[in-house]
Image (cartoon, rainbow, N blue to C red; front, side, top):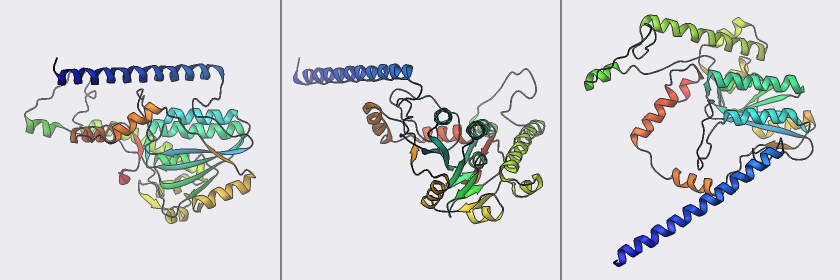
Length: 325
């Protein structure tokens, strides 16, 4: 063997040892989590480790409200985590030290399913516990982000908040023109004339329009109940447009314009509780390390286009502010 071959073997051996060590440590950490989660209902494993004494819980909804995707061993959850948030609220309901929720919303909305499920979970919290929910709108609280705010007793918005966008959107791509240009022939064998939606007919558009209208009517009803407004009054301002904080206040969509610090002070004063708690998800060393490495690797144009299409043009009904893309 020459020196280069020997050097290559040494490097390979070092890498093999490093991978083995990381695997052992990761497995040990996973076993620790499993044992702890089996032993207690509320544990530090799922991030729920509230302080002793009375406290107000901060529930943060940041980013697109959507289905929680599964993550790999070294993946770091990014943005809104749906199942984690629902479990967090369940834990709060079971904790008598919790005296209320501060719902912090910084979201342009999301899917119909997850938006309404979160709204109903917040309503359940209020009905089961009798504790209040105060809402604070940050950069955005539009469409689905506005819907979930309807569970709150009081709604505060930052002076520069964008909110409203009460409506539903369902979108997709018609790729037939591109296929023809590229010489690609698309075909499908279906059991019915409305099964294939690759090229939408007027009849198919009318079918989906009925579904969008149904979700829209539900959204209007939720706003009407949450804000104590007549159905007609909501429909008059629920044409999909977004509003500034001052416009939203004028139209009765929010209660006050305030900085976050002033809002928390007002909530503490009214509830007589001065301790706030927000659930955090603890990450192990290797997860954090691999996440940092992944963040510096540039994405290809194809990856960016694929991710954008999957997120924004999914073909499912969305309570989403199209203007905030």
